[in-house]
Image (cartoon, rainbow, N blue to C red; front, side):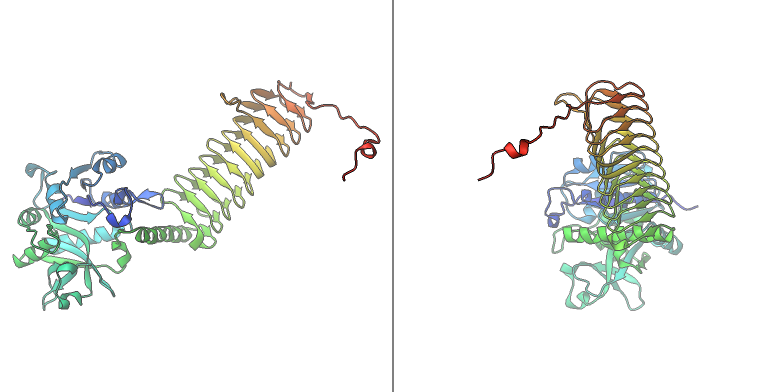
Amino acid sequence: MTPSIRTIVLAAGKGTRMQSPRPKVLHEAAGRPLLAYVLDVCQTISADTVVVVGHKAEEVRAAFPEKPGLRFAHQEPQLGTGHAVQTALQAWPGDDHDDDAPVVVLAGDVPLLRPETLRALCDLHLRRGASATLISFRAANPGGYGRVRRNDSGEVVGIVEARDATPAELRIDEVNASLYVFKGRPLRETVARLSAGNAQGEYYLTDTIGMLAAAGERVEALLLEDPSEATGVNTLLELSAVEKEIFARRADALVGAGVIIERPDTVLIGPSVRVDPGARLRAFTILEGSSRVAKGASVGPFCRVEDSSIGEGATVLDSCLIRSSTVDAGASIGPFAHLRPDSIVGVNAKVGNFVELKKTRLGNGSKAPHLSYLGDAMIGEGVNVGAGTITCNYDGVTKSPTQIEDGAFVGSNSILVAPVKIGGGAYVAAGSVITKEVPEGALAVGRSRQENKPGWAARRPKKR
């Protein structure tokens, strides 16, 4: 029987090099906090995770409310990674711990780690019966990474931090990824014996590897094929690079699943977005939040869709912004259209160039082809809204609704002063200001009578 796996996520650091007052693990990549990615990976192997918090701990707790399988341990003061693990272990009472249960330890700023890699780490650990198994990788320029020390037989015998390494050790190109799995009992016993006799004056978790090896315990290492998975985020530049990789992975996965993406290097698709096979995303398209693009739909170029649904076969043309709205099947949006929150565009309806909708429902087959503002409106089916039409929905205090029933025709340059209703099949003459209800089938003319003055131009004073 495979013992239950527990995870410890180290998220207490201040992240000084981020040059931001925000906790490092709450900085976002592709619209999600760094810590969210790590917790998602942990959930694929474990139902019991402790997050070690410290700097601005309450902000981190508030962003990830405690729930079954997730708890927090407060590290104060912050005396290094070994001390952080000591703090986390206290969250599991002794009588609530299986000595054989693996304990995974990883940082909260590694959003590129793949679930299959963490599973492979745990599988190797259990298969070899190791007391500790770490992830390492080869680095052409190891820099500040801890070096993995091996003996003549190739066995891992320790990790030395770059600050404490000798010139010979600094030449080692196998480095520590700061991702581990330990057997529970050896971990508890070893971290309790850590000392802070090093350049940082901190308790290094890395020291446990050498201590276990020296005690004759088995230590294994899983060599990463893709070192980017171990990338930690310590600066805004590194955050930008990680985000770029997240978007690239997302685009590659969707293309592999049958989504047509033009210029994938320019398209940004958030991790919670759903795009069906057969959809087309054109260059410089941004999909965010919980958006969905159905099969046969086309979005872009230069469009942004946030928390919105684009229906089957719908088209969103150039330079449109759609937020918290629904575009039904076969509808057409843009170019240069703006759908503000709570707008719904019905089946085969059209929102044309330079049209703005706000909290408006445009019924099936209806169209507002150009140059209109429609706010707080309920527009029925088969309605034509002429160019330059606006709903005057706000009087400075109250926002009022406009209702346009099925089959109505609103002429160009009309002003509909809410609250107002245009009856089914009614017509509004171009240039009208409508302030009261238009009955079904009626023609409403709300404009001054035209008056022509013959010869006026000749009598007009000449320019000097």
